[in-house]
Amino acid sequence: MSKKQSYISTSTTQAELIVVSEAAKELIWWTRLFKSVELDLHEDPTIGCDNLHTVRLLNSSAPKLITKLKPVDILGHWLHEQVDLGSIHVE
Image (cartoon, helix red, strand yellow):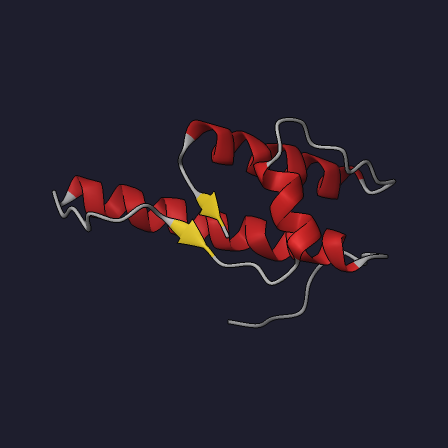
């Protein structure tokens, strides 16, 4: 799904973090719904991202992207935490 973003980003990595965070929120919601109805898909919840820098940033041991946009920083840290917890996988 595409829609107009509410943030103005200055790099593709920032834009990808915003998009991946929206996808992650929906994926976590669907995962919780499936668990509540006891449906097991036997697959890890995975988000595909075509920006290698974003994928490396989220899968590395420590996030290194610091921007002047506080909402983007918060989304990046939240995504990194979800990847570390195993709630989502980013490829």
